[in-house]
Every structure is written in C-alpha cells, then in structure tokens.
Image 1 (tube, rainbow, N blue to C red):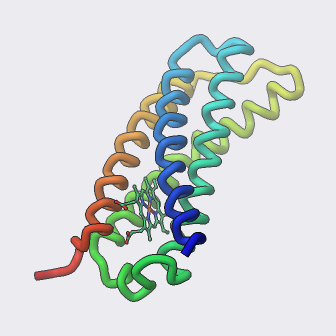
Image 2 (image 1 turned 120 degrees about the vertical axis):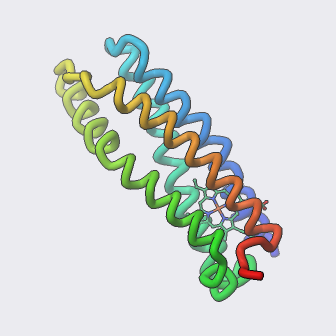
Length: 151
Ligand code: HEM
C-alpha cells in the first residue's frame, strides 16, 4: 500500500525536521536577538511547527485510519498512551513560547523591537522538548515492536 509507505516516510521525516528545528531554536534563543538573531529563531520555529503538523496529521491517520495495526490495537497499548501523554506535555510546554513568538513576529513585522527577556527560559524549554521528542521516539519504536501490553 503506497499510502502507508508515504505516511510512514513523512512521519519519520518529521522526526528529522522537528528534532533539528527545536534544537536550533533553543540555540538561536541563546544568541543575541537582533534582527538577524530573531530571523534565525523564527526560521527554526517555522520548521518546528511544520514538524508538529506532520506528526499529528500522519500519526492520527496511521493510528486511526487503519494504515498500521488498527485503532483497537493502539487504544489498548500502554506505550501508545504514554506516547500520546508525552506529546500532550510538549504541547502544553509549547503554549507560552508559541504565543509569545507569534507576538514577537507581529512586532517585528510592524518594525518594533520585541521585549525578549523570556528568551533564556524558552531556550531551556526547547532543550527539554527535544529530550521529550527522544523519549517519544523510544516509545514509538517499542510500539512498532509489539511492546505495551500487560503480561
Ligand atoms: C514527537 C512526536 C512523534 C514522534 C517523534 C514519533 C515518532 C515515531 C517513529 C520514529 C515511528 C516509527 C517506529 C518504527 O517503525 O520503528 C512512529 C510510528 C508511529 N507513530 Fe509516531 N511519532 C510522534 C507522534 C505521533 C502521533 C501524535 C501519533 C498519533 C496520534 C503517532 C502515531 C504513530 C503510529 C500509529 C505509528 C506506527 C506504529 C506501529 O508501527 O505500530 N505518532 N512514530
């Protein structure tokens, strides 16, 4: 099934894109945030957003549109729930940086210099999110190999 292959490829590519992007965003947030520095932050943040959408779109289809092992399999799998829980934690951690970066983008667009005191905290959050992505990858490879059922 070519569609199954395509979605698996896109899902895996999101890992390459997303991990690199969130790490790069963390590094960029630690550097000087002049116009060029902010452009680097926004660029990395764009790719982090694209990866999140790719994970969600292809992941939901793989889990619940019968592309892989079927809905019932995943809903009864503990490691799948752990994976979803970790994904939710990333989403919650990401709310503040996401909203703040949207504000910064608007300000830069209007020619204003944003207040960037929160940058250090967002850099640490980005590194934490990168660590959570690695844990999600570990959960995903466990699910693919049949782990996650009691006994
Ligand atoms: C940070 C987010 C995510 C990462 C890093 C990630 C990573 C991965 C990886 C590496 C695989 C391939 C495992 C293998 O074949 O060895 C995989 C498979 C899969 N992922 Fe994700 N994923 C993420 C988010 C999601 C989401 C949000 C969903 C569903 C809502 C999802 C559903 C699936 C499914 C159904 C599979 C196939 C598992 C199987 O072979 O049975 N993923 N994921």
